[in-house]
Length: 164
Image 1 (spheres, helix red, strand yellow):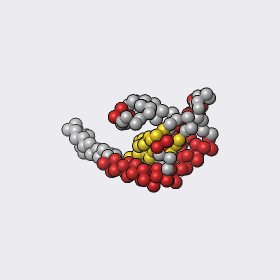
Image 2 (image 1 turned 30 degrees about the vertical axis):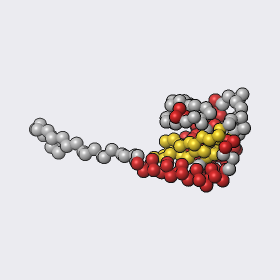
Image 3 (image 1 turned 90 degrees about the horizontal axis):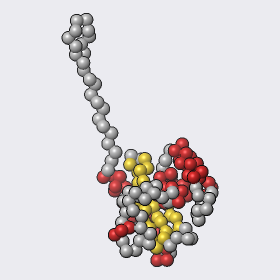
Image 4 (image 1 turned 90 degrees about the vertical axis):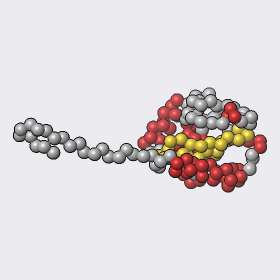
């Protein structure tokens, strides 16, 4: 997943600052699971297969295929993904950003785990706020399909030709 916009450099609370354009492994990001949950089956299977093949065997976190499936099912069931890793001081709550029903990314809230241990608060207060924001963005940026081109009318003045 690629960071397109964030507030890291505006916030004194960001422990790790990601710049715009930073790339994060799809299987280690809340936004990645939000995207995968709304991808087509073929696309999802291809992405997961490639990500698992390219995963660093020395990485501190690796998910088994069953765990990946559980996270994707959680996004479908709840409308958000919540990830916390033991070796990071931040946790992540993310929701999918869908345009015309297709995933285009996600909105992620990072928080310092020691200050927000109440997962009920994340689920009941912050997840609905992020979901509302994602819906507002989608409503303001509908995908427009170009109008169908008018059929071209070709008239010729050649003898024996059919003029339309």
